[in-house]
Length: 298
Ligand SMILES: Nc1nc2c(ncn2[C@@H]2O[C@H](COP(=O)(O)OP(=O)(O)OP(=O)(O)O)[C@@H](O)[C@H]2O)c(=O)[nH]1
Ligand SMILES: [Mg+2]
Ligand SMILES: [Zn+2]
Image (tube, rainbow, N blue to C red):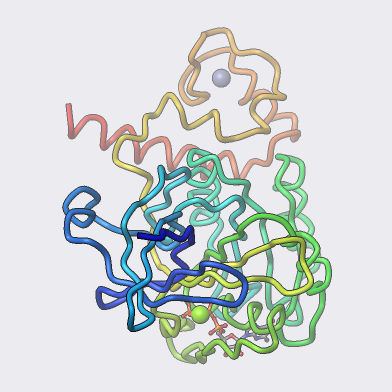
């Protein structure tokens, strides 16, 4: 039996679309034993398939996974484009910080992308926010799927590896995808005027090749609203995902959580203005959330 190597680029209703080369996508089912062995087959899974006489395929083997993300549900991605809208829906920096922590823990490079920059009405606030994240070491881009601002810069950043688009419903993930891949025609949904929320237009995750790139792929995903840190996430590891803390003066105590402890270099850096106060306050909220969970589970 001849086996072909491929990548699961989408999947629903028990079928998986497997891309075996640039020109061929095979509609596959999975062997029953695979479904027992792995509770789930993910978009992004590297697989081996056999071809059936009717042109469909059977997934025979799943290769080891790296970088599993529960939300959006995908594996083997290299970068995460964290998409926020300047407004409609309003950006949520606590959600952004959560996503930054989750991406880094999974070993995925995060990129921050402010979309709907055509709606920018407070340049000072925008600069304050972007500075805080840039100083922390995260790349920040300003784009507009509406008027094409920053799309070529975005394309350049996506030219290698697989990048997953992540963010709330309505921020414009599919609109950006359509700008990058004009042939794709991904469905775009209006943001409700009353609730200022997206309508969860995209239902399934799918991976598409970025034309003209050096093997870059991009994954459109359904928007989400809330995201939780993984259940095994500990308070002690949280500060590791704040690169700006590493540049602060040393703390008196080893394993300092930069909260109640005296002689804390991070708190000093916040007071001195070299760490963004608001991001630090959001850090404390996430820390409290994890500590509450740790108490519950003990
Ligand atoms: N003004 C403005 N509107 C935009 C921009 N990008 C997208 N939109 C609008 O925002 C709405 C939501 O866009 P989508 O692309 O469907 O958002 P999404 O993130 O894919 O949403 P889900 O699929 O629900 O997760 C649509 O009405 C778009 O026309 C932009 O850059 N500027
Ligand atoms: Mg969408
Ligand atoms: Zn400290």
